[in-house]
Image (tube, rainbow, N blue to C red):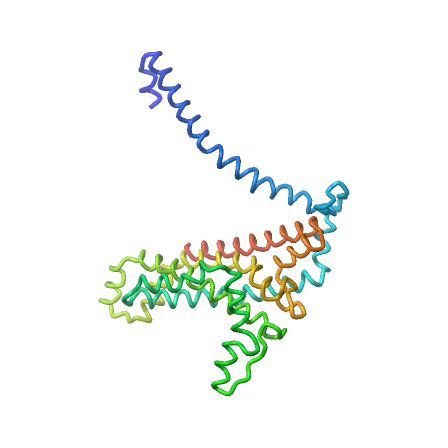
Amino acid sequence: MGVELAKLPKMKRRRITRSAVDQALAGYLFVLPALASLVIFLLGPIIYSFYISFQHFNYLDPQAATWAGFDNYLHLFVDPVFLQALWNTSLYTLVVVPVQTAIALFLALIVERIRGKSFFRVAYYLPSVTSSVAVSVMFVFIFGQTGLLNNFLSIFGIQGPNWLNNPSTALLAVMMIGVWTTVGQFMIIYLSGLQSIPEDVYEAASIDGAGGVSMLRYITVPLLRRTTFLIVVMGMIGTFQLFDTVDVISNGQGGPIGSTMTVVLDIFNKAFRDMAMGYASAMSFFLFVVILILTLIQNFVLGRENQ
């Protein structure tokens, strides 16, 4: 291309070069609004939040901010509320992510093979697009002492607890809400993954005498590894960012007795109720590092399996 350009007359070369510059400039101008928005509303606040995480900072009186060094980060390891929130969030993630992934795959395998696929796609996806606040209020009535769930259990002679007001069952109830609201979304992703598997692979396996279970174990699940990785990462990030459900059902207190306190709810309380924005920023970046490390570990495991 450079040789061909050198053979052209000087005036024509200059015209082509100027045209290329004009095109590049026009491209940058089109991108500029989005780039400016990204810097102003996303990158800028992130950098500023990281800066104030090293300060004792109250956003109602920013002039009185003082340098704290690593005190905010060190305080995380002796803060009983944060440690309780971190334990609850980790337990929630360890239970919800595998369960919702398994149920989503199971539903996708069923819906893929039955008629009325479009109806079931919409039906299962509805909870994912419904307001989380509305869903939480609905489950407050379902999990109440005289709610729908306990009325159902009473048919079998079982006296159910007051799920959301009992420390031993409140987090379990939140887990059930989390699975119910996200499984439809992940089922849709699994459906798209199933459609990408070539049919001739199943036909070849069928000719070799493979049964349904063998096909599932040696063809479907391995070929869905990338899809499963995506779902697990999305699920893990979503569960670590749990906020709205526990905020509604516990009235922002994370109760009873801290049993539904999560890291993000604790960050919200520290930032906007205790006005400790610097400490809340430190908690946010700690959570970011935890999610990043877990994602890298999953990526490493997947890469090793591909080799």
